[in-house]
Length: 286
Image 1: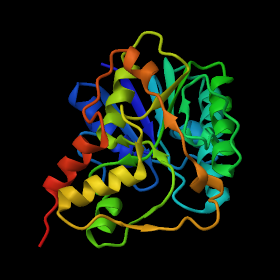
Image 2: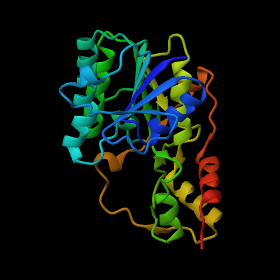
Image 3: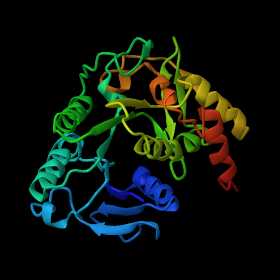
Image 4: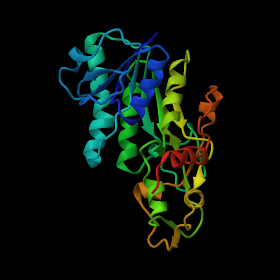
């Protein structure tokens, strides 16, 4: 049994906690308001920016998962969550004299600025132009250079239960697709985020960086049209592109999960089809 702390135990973290607790591990979920955590996760009320964090952290931790989200707030919110937060955690661990077996950090493929639709893997240049990617890289480096064993999982397009925006927009006829060449999108179901993290925790020596996406980067047009067919509604209308998108909206890349799959992880939802089909089946439409 491992002693596990999940900091920022939210959408992905709670699913991970339930999975690990179900396997017999002791799991604590750290967040500012832990009242609504699943019952199998022990709540820990704390803020990653608390100046007394070292006194709050439990001792004897085997694994720490850093799964915070920015919660909005633009660039300042990003910096607080993804750059300063990891540094605060590392400082608290050092003050407490704790040496966990490994720290896992959920980052994002936003660290890749490629917009040409080509394939990207862990060895591809990470030279982000948007603040989100730059700040995430700062947090990654803080952990990887800390002296503590650390592994980064770069996620993209997390969807799953409760995240129905894309389905809702197609069903309501509000979704649009731009004419022109394919614009590739990458995604991963929440349960595969949790599953991949749990899988990596069980490895003796995981690599430092993995990309966490499903098997099929897909043209956004194909995803929306497939959803429309599944919902039995008209395909989204096509719109002229207008000005070229910039910043995060300009992202257009195909992210490879080959390194993650080489570890033996098998996806519950290998593509958007399996994931969204299950969500649509669970939704109640009048």
